[in-house]
Image 1 (cartoon, helix red, strand yellow):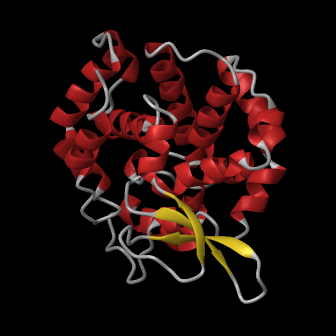
Image 2: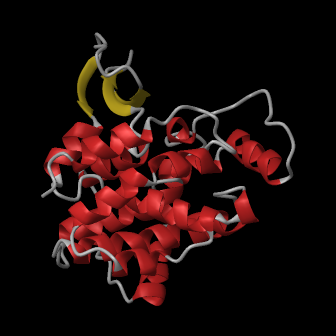
Length: 254
């Protein structure tokens, strides 16, 4: 089951943080963010919180785990490097998530008293939940394309300006930002805050004690963007353009 897999897999090389601990920290941050903007219980919050818990499922990719292990041991990264968001649909991850929904609900209830309604995280809404996972670093989007047998399947694409002849529709980060405003960037921000505080040994509760609005929070994150990105690059040496991404997310926030 997903919860057990998360407990034995790495999320961060620093301190060998488990994927489970990172996912739960992200959920805690996401709940605080939702409270900050007055988002109450309901289907929409269920979608966002569930998406936050599963957003890093692609890190279960064994090649990405090898990258984290190397970084944790101070060794050179392996020659084969993968981007974990691009592995979201690989290794039967969707099936693993589907089979683990009840277990995830119990974890959230036990840790945070959050009552996730399973009926709210089924059917077509899962398209958006997967899109949150695929887009949470701003690089990829989900393209739904018809295969040779006429079946429409989700594929992960990177070039936003490209169009594919078999594409029926797509879900991009921009779509999520509009659909879930002002929390379209919730998964991204929760991930960044949890990651930054873990890397720096800081308490994110202190951060929330210093801000009174989502706009204030974005201002602080943009200030720390370069520092956050340097921490990520220890195990994933790509250019995240984090400051630019945060500026995009903050654009519609007052």
